[in-house]
Length: 266
Image (cartoon, rainbow, N blue to C red; front, side, top):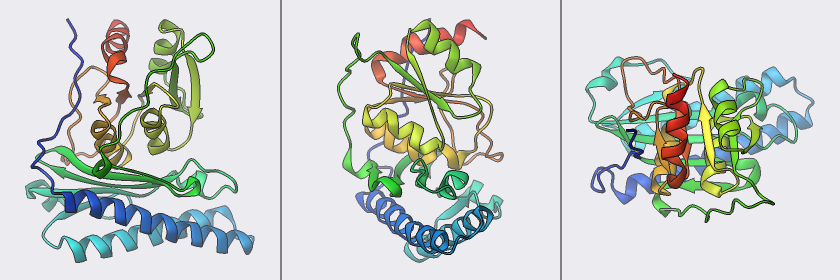
């Protein structure tokens, strides 16, 4: 029998200062990216330049600020060299300086963001996700509460999945639960759609990395959402190989049914 569970970090694992630091850095970086985007788009710069400069600016800013604020902590960044010394660190920040680089480079796209997460003993204990183009911050410091379940005949359940790479698992869950299937770009935007109550279940298979989901999972768990692998196993971070192929984030009351559907297709 499958038992649904969520990752719940020990309340003493991260201080309130860690939660606030993650939020502050995510907001700062988002503002820098918005300014860069506006300047380069005004110059009709090619999308490749926006992508390269966005990744560089965000990475350099976050690395500088984290080393200044938490010099003893390790950092794993999508845009940096993986220093394996992090494996022996008690505290490791896992960051995606610009989640959704392609979306960032496209005018009018809002589904991109910044992820700042803190991992202690392999679990995300603090995190922040910003969607700068929407002016939104999601932080584990705020202990957000998911919006009440509102599925009705006029608003059926919604399963959210990747745009362009629609996982078979998401299709199966949507079909079995008679849910609408929604597609969106960046990983953080999809996870936050569940936290915001815009969607109910986020199913991803086919490949991600720890920086794609670390901060979103910290925020989702703070909001009392379920977060796990598609087989129900816990999501573990700061692993030797940062590849983390699949993830489920959903409303807690939907976890058991979703995991049962996913198990049936194994």
